[in-house]
Image (cartoon, rainbow, N blue to C red; front, side):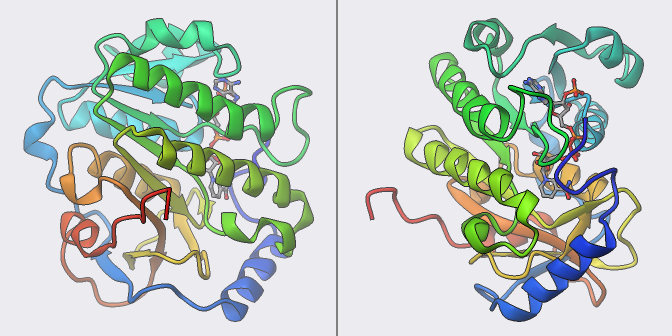
Length: 277
Ligand SMILES: NC(=O)c1ccc[n+]([C@@H]2O[C@H](COP(=O)([O-])OP(=O)(O)OC[C@H]3O[C@@H](n4cnc5c(N)ncnc54)[C@H](OP(=O)(O)O)[C@@H]3O)[C@@H](O)[C@H]2O)c1
């Protein structure tokens, strides 16, 4: 499938647009930073907790599964293609077949799950009919959140995107539907009552972003870029972190001095206002 930024690397046009966006939009709060490769503080709490990764055969999802296994979590992968999953994922991962468009497939996958990481994407271009941003990024995440709530999941981590609040005038038109769909899923999750964390990455790249450091911001300003492996690291590090609960933040990697660790960065972020505000 093709995601909204194409085949793993940004197109020159999209890169330019993001630079333009970065120059034209102000940042939210003072950013918090951490060195590439630093880990969060949840490592010791990982043992045996079951994590459901949705989008586990995706490019970020595979990294997330590998890192979860390395950190001692039990991992369940919700996938559409079990053969693809077994070829791509570490041995020992519990592979269950499901589709986020079909809520009936989600309840069985949630049984016994403590944490959910949703890294699904329907793609912004060349989408398969009926499996685009509205069906996957919006309604798929709604279905997942509903199922997670029924199962009593302790934390739902939604991989969203930077610039979701600027969908209507985003300078790359083909990305507008996916950004709008992701914002709707964010809003639904924030209002759901589920414990959650929303991670909004900048443009995803496959190359490691080092040397550099992770920058977390709020306010949906310039999105920047980040490698998928670092996005996975952040998505795993928020699990079990009280400091990351109820927070929405952007994530990018930038050159410069590193400071602190991920847990300190989460703690420096502001909690989201309640949906009623
Ligand atoms: N690309 C970017 O620059 C960018 C920027 C900001 C945010 N993001 C977001 O970051 C996340 C990770 O991106 P990525 O490029 O690493 O992902 P990706 O490689 O495109 O993987 C997407 C995953 O979603 C799964 N999926 C699609 N439709 C599904 C359905 N109906 N039911 C269940 N699973 C379904 C795919 O399954 P299959 O393996 O079966 O196809 C795949 O595992 C996504 O949420 C994406 O939107 C991307």
